[in-house]
Amino acid sequence: MSYYFAIIGTQDNPLFEYEFGTSKQGGDGQSRFSDQARHLNQFVLHSSLDIVEEIQWTSNQLYLKAIDKFFNNYISCFITGGNVKLLLLHQPLNPAGAGGSTTRNSTSIGANPTSPQTEEAIKNFFTEVYENYVKAIMSPFYKANMEIKSPVFRARVAAAGRKYL
Image (cartoon, rainbow, N blue to C red; front, side):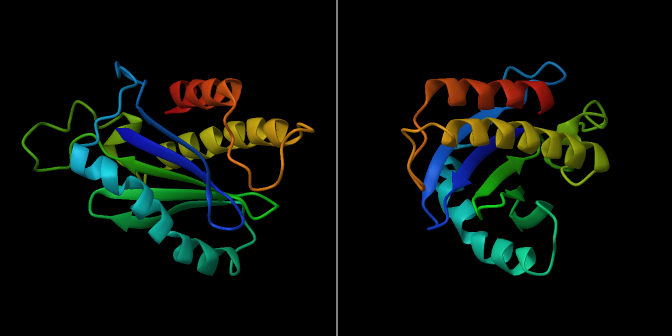
């Protein structure tokens, strides 16, 4: 499974972006997005912001699960108390019928992007990233809606991805 993670500020500006692949069940952590899809990832995430805003006013949850689907990509969302959105675009390994057996991966997180196990793993990823995000913005040098360039924060997001996804 390939992932594209972004933190979107209150003015719909990207604060942080990170692309990675699965590290579970023999994954190497490398993203498998095609070059064409890689160029669309940011657009796809930003196009889901309207859906996020509709759902956030009807739900009192921080974790909104898989809120949108674009072709074979799913978008999950976590909203902070300050209305900053953590978005994760995830693409399953091999869709059924795409020339390859999916029975080997049927128990992996990437086999079914809407399964309870996948949702739980994504929720845990978001929770850990959110905790690290709060620590990053508590810096006296951080201003609201400023891009996060900290290599420590990037490393912690990568570690959370390896741990849960």
